[in-house]
Length: 116
Image 1 (spheres, rainbow, N blue to C red):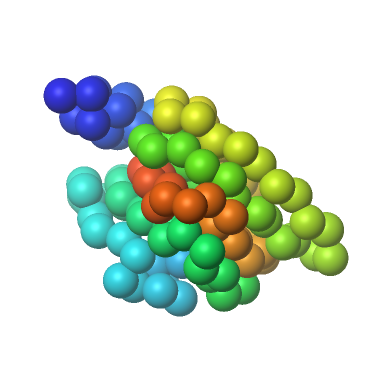
Image 2 (cartoon, helix red, strand yellow):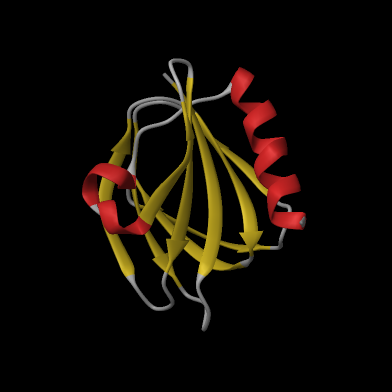
């Protein structure tokens, strides 16, 4: 039930956000939860210990954490390590290029929202 509540909240948030990203680089990472002419909501599972390749987000987006963990973001020579808890949300602007490493022992589960 909580999962559907989170996904519903993300769908509502879609009225103000957007993104394109790892879907193109690693299509097996995601499944599309909702898509129509204005929005795409994607479910992302980042496996433990895996380094996901550099990719560029064409549009701004919001990620909502369903299952937390520690992600390491590499962007423009900088490295940021973030510990996420379920329910956390993050924003990325358009045209951001980065790569991600899941430093957790468990998968990190994210719902990502993009506007078309």
